[in-house]
Amino acid sequence: MEEELQESSEPLDLTEIQGIIRRRRYHFLVPFFCGWLLVWGLSWLIPPTYRSGTLILVESPSVPEKYVVSNIDTDIQHQLDSITEQILSRTRLLHIIDRLGLYAKDRKRKSDEELVEKMRKDIEIELSRGDDRKLSAFNIYYSNGNPKMAQQATNELANLFITENLEERQKSAENTTSFLAEQVEQARAKLADQEAKMRAFKDQHLGELPTQTQSNLQILAGLQTSMASNEDALNRAKQQNTYLESLVNQYRSMGGGSKAEGGQTGLAEIDKQLDQLRAQLADLSAHYTDKYPDVRKTKEQIAILQNTRKRVVADMNNHANNPAPEASFDPKNGPLYEMESQLKANRLEIATREAETKDAQMKINEYQSRLNMAPVMEQQFAEITRDYDQSKTDYEALLAKKNQSEMSTDLEKTQKGERFRMLDPPNLPVRPSKPNRLLLSAAGVAFGLVLGICFAFATETFSAKIYSEREIKKLVPFDVVAEIPPIESLDEQFMNRRNAWMAGGAAVVALAFIALGSAVTYLYG
Image (tube, rainbow, N blue to C red):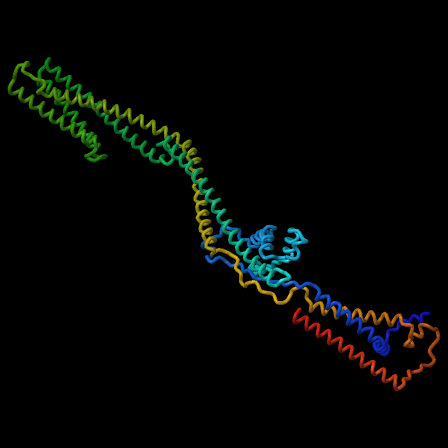
């Protein structure tokens, strides 16, 4: 049993294969040729589809971005997706279908939605990226049974992409500029409000602002110095008032004693006062110039006392040379009148000095109060200043962005920004893109081969005749003792040669038809 299985599984030898080919050549050639002819013929029955395409270049801005920064989203992929959605919308595609008369045969049996969906399937967008993976160009393809219609529709789609891109970029740029303009106006109003608050605060706290602290300190120091000087002058005036009062009292008491004695006493007081004034003048001159008020006043007092002393001395000399009765003495013409006048001036000076000292003290108190309020004012002023500075910074930043956006918008309006440009116009297709008849012809050859081999193998398998020793061994369990070779007559030999030539001719004719069909497909398909 095992021997039978081994014998039945033996492969065909070359002689058996040659015999099968000789016997089943027509069973192979006819299905082979018919299979190719069927596929090739069907390829010519499929309606042709022509594909037109154009290349759209993504052109960089004419002005470098470092000079004018775009105010539009620079993601060209996002822009293209948005534009594609708009162009492939139902309204846009129906407008193109109606204007160009596309799908005229299908319009009677298909709805608008079906026509739009069919056109979407016929449109193809192919992206092209550069080395940096950035979109640099894209192709637009449209397929239709009419090559001229395909070209016109592709041109229409390309123009829509270019126009829509320009309009979309201009609209986006204008919207950005408009938004920034609104923000600038709001920032300007906020800044004006902050300026008004700062101005009101400065008017309300004039002299108490932190920026005036240094000047307040200087003024306070000057007031304190002036007050100290006034107090010194007041003390000197009070001392002088005491001397003047004593002199006047002595002159008034001259009626009870000798005038010479009163004159001597008054002269001594005048000399004492002159010494004090000279010492005071020396002290003032060491610190101040001759134009300083206290220096000039001291000099005037010294001059007055010197004149008084001269008159007292002269009066004493006249009284000693020409004694006269007491009744002839006229106080208005003597030193007493001058002393009383000087005493009045001194009292007026004291009153003036006291008023100046009081006024200076009030001012010192006022400036001291300002300095005490400086920390509070500084905190309040810092809050107002911080809000004002922030508003000013925001306003300046928004204003700069608005100006930059306006430049970018002008760039888009003049079409000098990033834009789509049709590099090549849509081509008029000469050959249909579908079906690929040459490829179908090759597929027909492959189909014919498979069909011919299968048919020939089936015929050989189900044949009732035995042509080899291996087939005999399958039927009987005996070994072949002898083999009788085929004996052909002359007529049979002639018939076999003729059949071989006819089979070869048939094969040549079939291959010639296949080659001719493929050539026709290549030239006209």
